[in-house]
Amino acid sequence: MPELPEVETIVRDLRRARLADKTITGARVYWPKMVAPLTPRCFTRRLIGRRILRIQRRAKYIVIRLTGGETLLIHLRMTGQFTISADPETRARHEHILITLADGRTLRYRDTRKFGRWQLTNRPESLLGRLGPEPLAAAFKFRAFQEKMRLCRRQLKPLLLDQSILAGLGNIYVDEALWEARLHPRRQSHTLRAVETRRLFRAVRAVLRRGIRNRGTSLGDGRPNFSSLGTARGRNQRWLKVFQRTGRPCPRCGRAIVRLIVGQRSTHICPACQPAVVRIRTGGRKALRYKASARSR
DNA sequence: AAGAATGTTACATG
DNA sequence: ACATGTAACATTCT
Image 1 (cartoon, rainbow, N blue to C red):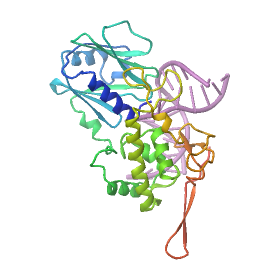
Image 2: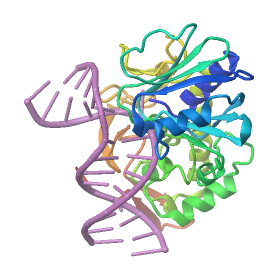
Image 3: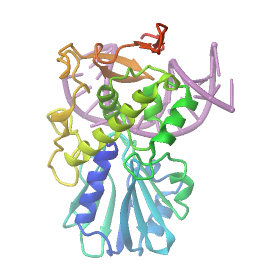
Image 4: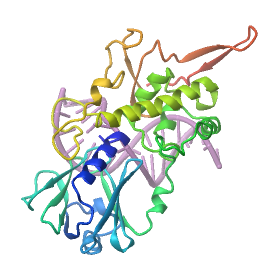
C-alpha cells in the first residue's frame, strides 16, 4: 500500500494530530515478529515513559524520535495503517500494536498481512544510512542519478524499486514514472541517453510530487486500500495513467495498456509509447538499437 | 479455486 | 562481484 507519497501523507497527518510532546504510557504488541529483534516485553519496556519529540519520513519509513536517544522506525510494507482513538477501546481485527499516550489517546496499528516492522533503536543510522537519496530532496542531483544509472547496468524497473539506489518508489509510482518518461521497464539502465535519463529523472519527481499533492493513491473501491489516519481516501488514483489499467487506452496515444511481469512484479506499460526496442540516429546514418532485455513469462 | 495484491530480504543461479 | 530469479513472510479479495 504505502510508497513515498502515502507515507508522507500519513506522517503529515500524524504531525497534525499533535503527537509531539506526548509521553508514551503504554504499549501492547500482539504479533511478536513485528518488533523483532526485540521481544514485545523488551520493546514495551524501552518505549514506556519516553516522550515523542518529532515525527519524520525517510523513504518509506516513518521515523519517530523519542527522548533518551531512542528512535522508532516503522515500515508499513503492504498493508500497515494507523488510526488514533480517544480511548483504549477493544482491539479491532488485525490491530497488532497499540500505543497509549499520556493524554488518553491510543495510536493503533492495523496490518492485515502482518508484513509491517517496528524497530526501536538508538542507532537509526545503521538502517537509514543504507538507503539511497530522497528523490524530492534538493540534494538529489541529476548528475549523481545519471552516474548510478550508467554504472548499474540493470533493468530500469528493478533498479528504480531498489531502495538503496533511490529511496521511496514502489510498484505504482515506478510504472507511472516509466510511462511518463516513455521508457520500457526492461531497458538496461546504462543504455539510456542523456535526454532519456533526464526525462526519467523529471518523471520520478513529478509523479511523486503529484502523489503527495493528492494525498496518496487508494486502489480498488473497498476497504483494504490506502487511507491515512482517517477514512478519507487518497485522490491520486484518478491520475494514474497505466498502473492497473490493463486494456484501457493510453492517455497519450490510445493504444491498450498491457501488463507484463518484470523483476517478478506486475508491470503496466503502453506498448507504443514505451517500446522494447529503440532506434537512435547518431549523427550519420548509423542506427544504434537499444533492446529491452527479452525474457518473457 | 488459482492467482494476485502498494514491500523487503535471504538465498540460489548464471 | 554483479545481475537476475525464486521463495517466503500472511491474509484477503476476485
